Image: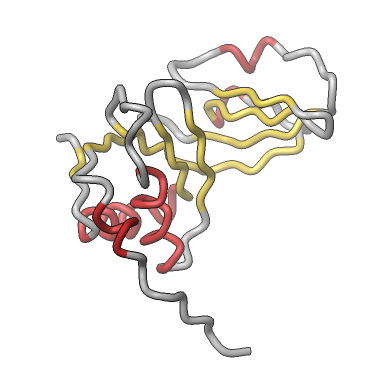
Length: 143
C-alpha cells in the first residue's frame, strides 16, 4: 500500500493564525477510558493538568501517567503541548495550524480545547520531532 499524499494546506489555514507560543508541560500523561456513567476515581483529580470528557459512550480522562493505577484501560506516554493563552474565540485555525503539520508528518496526536486555550498531546517518544515540525511551521516554544 502506497503512502497517501495530503493536499496542500489551504491558504486560509496557513494565514489565519500568527505564531503561537507553546510550552511543554512537565510529566508524562495518559489517556484513560472509563465506563459510561462512572464516578471519577480519586486519582483523576491530581496534578496540575487533567481533563475529563463524558459522553453517553465513555468517560475519557487525561491525567499524569503515574497517577493511573494498573488495570485501567489506558494509553500511556503522552506529552502535553500547551498553546499559551488565553486565546480569543474569534481566532480561526489555531488547532489546524498545529495538527496539520503533525498529520503531514504522520504523528499521532490527541487534542483538548478549553475556554482559554488548546492543548495537543504528542507521544513522548515523538516530542523532539513534533517540536521541530511545529517550529518549522512558525510556532515558538517557551524557554
